Image (cartoon, rainbow, N blue to C red; front, side, top):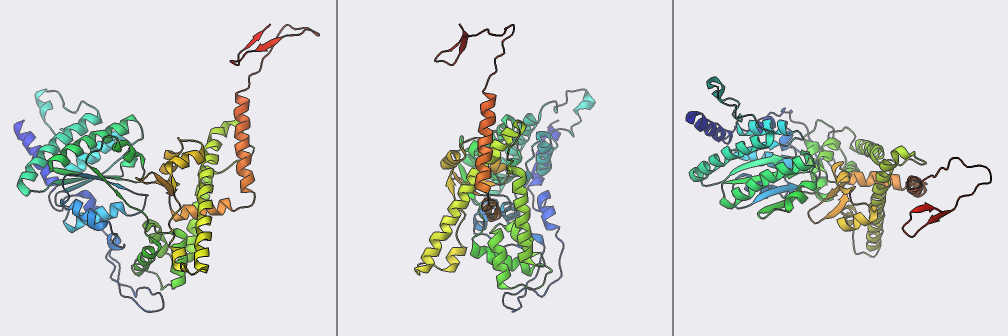
Length: 467
């Protein structure tokens, strides 16, 4: 049994050896593309050597910090990467791991089912949770007779022993990355798992033996972890600015097997999809970038209406859903109004010579404080669901923005449609009417003859009694 325990530690040490990480293996299997002529803004050819899907992006300014974290140079803290889906958080981590062949780094993706997550963590750490033990041959109790939480705790105990060994040997901490922690269920079990890892992250950061990195698209894990955070640092990852998005689109186009494009096509495409890297990747791979950007906008608009579409004269069976939809449109309508105000103000500055057309194109997404957003929606419990559906985004400053430029444009098209204001108000009135009917009580009196009368009295508390 002593040999088995020592072998477990040796296997976990192997998980942090250079080149072991399964996530890095997947990233390194990229299909090599032949060198193309490249693309051009004004007809000039640009040479670009395509090296596969993990090198086709612009190096973000946050990459330097991510490199220091993954390379074990940031000691005494643990980190949360917070930003909307598709901004490049995982790509930056993979790039930093590739630079050192994942030496001292392990990466694991979260999952709503804790049993699945248990297996994923075991794969990342090269740990079998004692399932490979032979104690059953000697009729001893199987140590796996427990739930996933205790299994995770057992794995973390083993990992701590390995981290202490490696810190003494190499003089730098190990790195454990938990990717997409928003996939944990936002309930008691999911929050308990986050707390379980956060407690270890705090202790390991204090001792400098292991640095944990959490990555999330949604804000709720940050709010949960913030309650107990002492050594937590948050790295916010936003969409690229219009200028950087234009540069990134040009470089992505160079790596695609597509014909040359004009400067106006790039500007129209970037103006529609914004600086979201995943959207830029899709647009630049299309033969006609502007047409594909407009198609993406139409798809986004259709998806938005499928999630929070308004139903006039709705039945009471969908009242709760329409309450959610109408409150959501109140917030999106306010975003559109503020965007229009931003554009009007910037155009006035351009006329006065205080700004340029480039400033108009580089305007950031409108933002509203979390506190004010709750007042606009008149509901506080809808914010997390909108964030989960990638309709809005919440940052560490508790500011709320549309999730992407594409969402803002889609919402703008809906809000600008004729009759939208009347439709929204009509749905809100219908919801109020149904709620009023639900609060109405019907009294039925039996055994009454024609001409009989009944006297009722309603007191100050609202109760009714017969006289």
